[in-house]
Length: 151
Image (tube, rainbow, N blue to C red; front, top):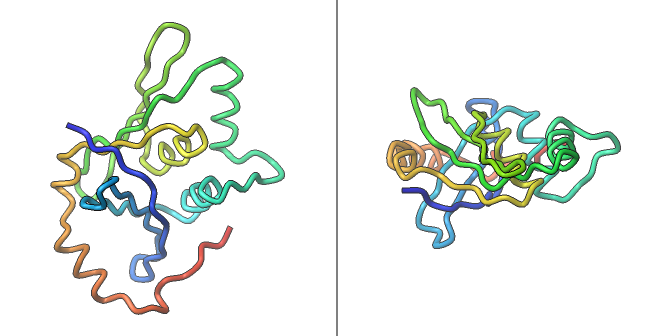
């Protein structure tokens, strides 16, 4: 079973020197943090803020390419969590066929935001995610740990 989620924000993890994409379901009952690199966070941030860079970035190019060949992203699914690594699939249609493409979740999310495609997460991923560990990490945060993403 899958749960539809939305990107609720980005934050910086000073302990791991990485960014975290926060996914939440509609009821706000489930949350999934996904750690991503700075450039991936930047790509997601630009899409969230509806900012168009002067030259297309990789995910803008991917979206333009799909548009040019009349392919459409129908959804992305975060499919697995294995040894602290998340896995995702991009589902798209082209002509009369559907295709599934392996992807990093950060790239899939950046493309989904640009394509206005829904984001889903397998329930098994939500269960695997150790909320206890994440809650403990959140308890140790100080207000100054929350920073603005550099674009």
